[in-house]
Image 1 (cartoon, rainbow, N blue to C red):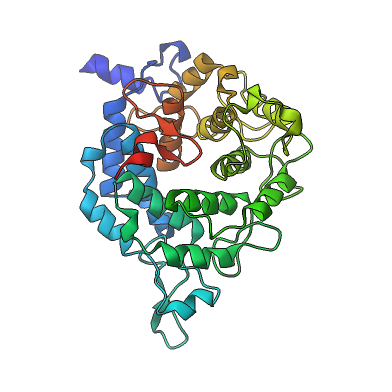
Image 2: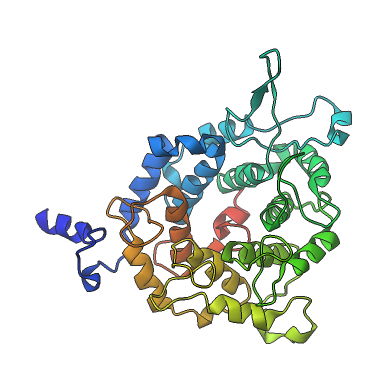
Length: 365
C-alpha cells in the first residue's frame, strides 16, 4: 500500500522526478472520479451551476469513452435532460424570435418578472448541443423528441453574416455557436435550421493570415476556434475525407497554412498550446489534435511526446489538470480522456471527433 501511495503521489508532487511519473492511463481511478462528479459536484463549481447540463455532458460522455456507461442511471438522466427543454405554447410562438432548445440548468429555466413571478427564460444553443449529446449517448429515441421546435427556432439565431447567437438576444456571435448549430443539425439529421452557405462564408472569413481560425473575423487564431471551424465544415459535408490526398489548391480554406499553424502548436514538452507563446494545456491536445485528426494530419503529431505530457497532467485523484501538478477539473479531465481516445489508448471507446461523442453513441439506439 505504501508503494502504491508513493506511485500516485509522484503524479502531483512538484519535487518528483519527471522520469518517475507513471506512464499508464489509470482508467479505474478516472471512472471513480467521474462517478463522484456525476453524483455530487464539489463546491468550487457553484459558479457553474447555470451550466449544469454541460458538466453532466462531460461526466457522461467521459464515462462512455471509458466504457463505463453502466454506472449511469440512464432513465433518470434522460428524464432530467428532457425536463430542461423549452416548449412553445403554440405553433405561432416559433416565429417570436425565441429559441426553444434546452436550458443549462433548473435555475436558468425561469426568471423573475417585475412582480416577482417566475416566467420562462430563454434556452441556450450550447446547452442544447450538450443535451442532445447526452440523449444520443444514452440511446434515446430522437423520434420522440420535439425536434421541430428546436430547428425552426434555431433558424432565428443565425445572423446575416452567417454566425449564430446562442440565445435570442443580447449575446455574442462567434464560431462556437456555428459549431453548436452544425452539431445539433447533424444529430437531428435535419439541416433546415441553418443556412449552410452563409455559415460556410462566415467560417472562411474567420481564417486568419497565419492559417488558424479566430472566433470572429479578424481575431487572433485560437486552437478552440480552429476546431470549431474545421469540425463544422466536416459536419456540413464541406471537407472531404482524407483531404490531404486530394488537391488542396481548389479548397475554399487555406489547408497548407492551417496545417502549418496547427502542427506548430505542439511544443517541446509534447503538449499543445492554444495560441503561439502560450503555455501548453491538456484541453488543446483535443482541440488542436482533433482538428488535425479531421484533416487526416494526425500522423504528424508526436504521439510519444503528447502522451508523456498528458501523463504529467494526470491526477492521483483521477481526471486531469490543466497543466502539470495542478488539481483535476471536469473540463480538462474530459478533454484528457478525448485526447487519449484519439491516441488509441487501450480499453477506451473510439471517438467521433467532429461530433464530440463516441462512435458507438453515433449509432446507438
